[in-house]
Image 1 (cartoon, rainbow, N blue to C red):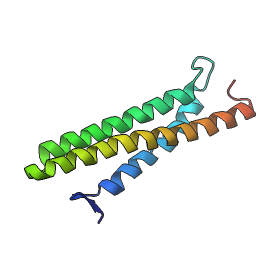
Image 2: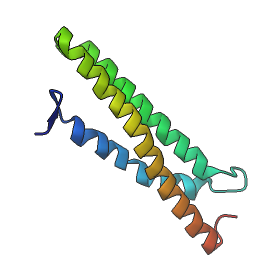
Image 3: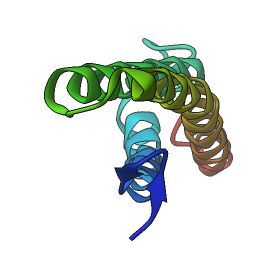
Image 4: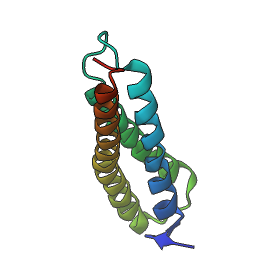
Length: 114
């Protein structure tokens, strides 16, 4: 089991959640890539970054509320949560943008999206 700063599973759970953005970005482009939404790639990128920030904040809340941490460990909780928010926002936005961009480009070439 992977442990970082005394929190088991954080390293495994967060990247798996970030990978869920790949099919979500593709589905968003396929469904909403119409003239009514001129920038679906930007939309899903912003949603992905927001989701990553919210997941980091939820982790911070759960860690502070339900974990029995000593006062000297609270700094580590805040640092780990900050890393999850920062890195998560960048990684999620990059993954969603990449998948949405290539899906949108593929659909434009096929003539399905204007």
